[in-house]
Structures are given as structure tokens and as C-alpha cells.
Image 1 (cartoon, one colour):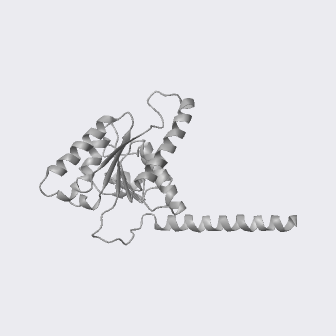
Image 2 (cartoon, one colour):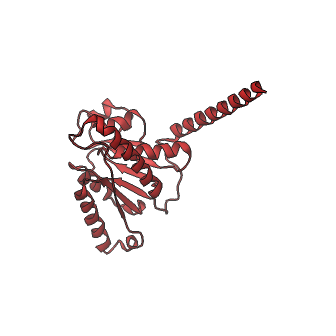
Image 3 (cartoon, helix red, strand yellow):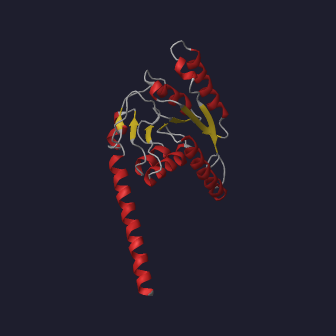
Length: 227
């Protein structure tokens, strides 16, 4: 009887592992490959903001002729970065006030803040607790917004959000395309956020703005200056 129970447990574990391997293989295969979508439909888009020029860059990236395809938009910034959210609000208000963006009035943008994993000058020991809180908060935000696209360009707050979105992709909960654009200030080396996303293969599209950077990281795409 005990041997039968152990055999059943072993079979269940083997089945779970097999399904997990199949799912991971499937996600890795399709990551970076475009899915067929109705070109007339828009995509729920999360835009991750950050201080130090990241917000100005990402808003420049978002401000493209096809921006209506990326709606409704949700902007996420660190809890201590209210200025970035203000810039995003000004940008969205300018779209609402323009003559050719009446459709945007039906789907207003959302603005949210997330706990940071580590503040500047914070000790690494105390950052363990804040990192756990940030991950839990990131998962709550991703589950709440259910983005189909995430746009980011380097702030540290993008790591837990992208990781949570990728985890939900692995679990089959939702599929989110992560598009990372490295800052134009990065000419020779990736930022820490970019390096993590690149090494962990979390991004579906990894874009850089300098040929030298693309040569060093061959899985990236050189798109030239985007602003």
C-alpha cells in the first residue's frame, strides 16, 4: 500500500515537472516572436517611469504616430517619484486636448506608484524586507492592470514588474509582451536593469540605441536614437 502511494506521488511529481518543462519551453520559444493580433484592436499598455531622465525618454518613445494602438495606458513610478507621474499626467492631458484624440476620452490613463526595492543609501540588510514588499506590490499591480504590453527603459522599478509579468506568462495566467529600450546614455555597457533583463531573457524585444552596444549584446536590436 505504501509502495503504491509512493508510486502515485512520483507519477504526479513527474507529470507536474513535465508540464512545467513543456510550458517553459513554449514560453521561451514564443518570447520575442510576434503573435497574430487583430490590427484594429488596441493593447493594454503599462509604461514604467523613472527619475534621472528615464521618464523623458520613455515619453518620447511613447509619443509615436501609432500610440492609439497602445491604449488604455497605465503609468507606474516609484512611490518617491511623484514628479515622473506629473509629467505623464501633463502628457496625457495634452493628448486629451488635441483635436485628433477624441477617442482617448473614452479610455483614460491610469497613474500608479510602486514601492522601491531599495532606496538610495539604504543598507542591504534592511533592503531584503523592502524588496519582498516591492515584489508583492508589483504582483498586485500586474494582476490589477493585466497589461498586454510593458514599455520600460531602465529604472530599477521595472525589474519586479517585468519579473511578475513573466511569471504570469509562465503560469499561463496572461501573456504580456515586454519591450525594453536601453537609455541613449548607455553607449558601451548596459545598465544594471538592462543587464538583468537581458541575461534572464525576460524581454521580448531588447532595443539599444548604439551599434557598439548591439555588437556586445547580439540578442539586442540597434534601432538608433529614438528621441
